[in-house]
Image (cartoon, rainbow, N blue to C red; front, side, top):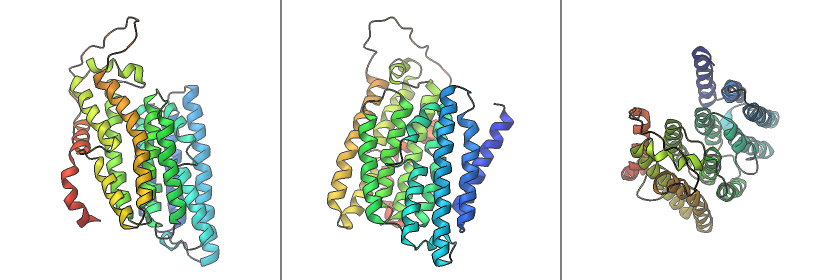
Length: 346
């Protein structure tokens, strides 16, 4: 794919995202979601590999279904209330359909089956876009309609997402699939708090995007896609692999790293809402994710390959690390001291 085509699709992605997050009318939001879907499809399928074509087909079918449900829920709400405004979603059935549609867009349980397969079939930079920018419009719609959504349904879906994201990631060897299940698990943390503190959900999303971007960009730099090649990648860029260890631990939510900040604030808010048992359950479920993050970190920096076959060591590359990776990694591990400022923002 030539540069002009990539630029056009990137601008279309930006346009679709901007239209959705700035619109007040449901039809405009739906149009932005459709532009987004159509502009990411060529980026998924650009390698022309059968796996990539399959991923693009799965992505198109699920996103088209979710967009149709968004349109259907907004039309049902307009039929009953006469309102097309996104913030005026008051009809109960419409809210339930909208929750299902956005969960399908995001890849939350029980609509999660497409996401790991699509991420596995996509190039790693496209996978980064799917895990970060493509989740912004649905999260923005959740944010704008948070006061109307059913807290019980969202809590149930959130706990299921945290559980399945942790369980299904345990047995994976492909890094993109591990990151996909990590994303599903983090969506659980975002969904559980959105009826009570929508700004906290957005904070969690921004920090998740930061940490995931650092990991994807590092994997792209050292050209690693599965655990067996991750074991031999430490010779390519030892310093970058050491930073990868800290970023993975941050994504797992260990103190004193950045990833601990949203989990701490969410647990605090759930306790204030008299939901201490829910907070305990989702905290325990995050330990499942901690296991595969530790396994990734162990493979990246601590262990040598435990097999007897000869393999060629990678040459140490002296190519300097890009500024973007450096900034995202530093922010992914060092933002916890700003936590006293958070109450003034939320």
